Length: 305
Image 1: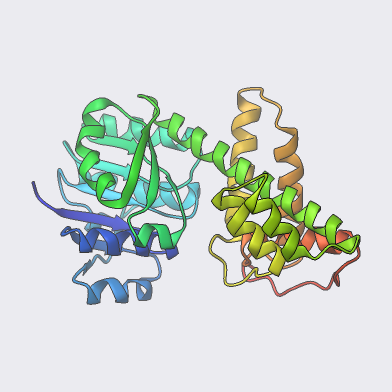
Image 2 (image 1 turned 120 degrees about the vertical axis):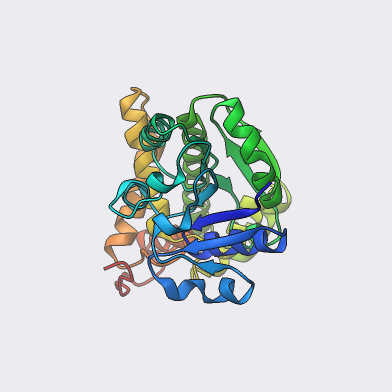
């Protein structure tokens, strides 16, 4: 088996995943729209591709981890897109959080070229990617998943399969992120409630994480919200807003009301409008504190503008 992989998208998560693959013995040809982000990987032995087209080789494997639908579609199908060079027998392993509609379009595009497509979004943050501790959600046809398996195993502690429809994996990932965002909002509101009534935030968060909600989400994010540690971002608020918005669009298409997701989307949108798009999405805690009159409502500088 040729162990050369095209890897596209070197943000915090992509860079950590690419480094893990290099350490597992794979050779990488990497591409990022901002090429300076590739320097650490080049030092580990990766090769730099000048275009997405160059990152792919005929019949090979391309892994993508990019920010949104627009970026991925352009990278795959634009003038220098990798779909043209991947060709028969090649595999596109899409690990970004994207819409199920785009996932299905890309699967059809590759199928028309006799190539394979697997949707494999991840659960976990960059530190988990670096430690090979991601959880992976996959969907696609059986032959494609068999090809993808070694690469996914090199990145993860476990793989959950959701059938043949590639869009199914993206539905599961978006649903998971709605649950996470809803937990953040719930923690943000109750911590503000506790503080406003004289209860120390950190003590309340510690009790929740040890009793009612003894799980990493409440323990780690609860600690961050209680201590108001919203920077540096492990997962930017702008990305959380994008994911909840995608979930609501997919829900509308399938006629599923998601009232709580709508509330969380508006809270994230409010935070972004105040210049907090570059903060961690746990900065929902700052929104709740301000609404309770516990903090200033001064706007931050918008890193996404």
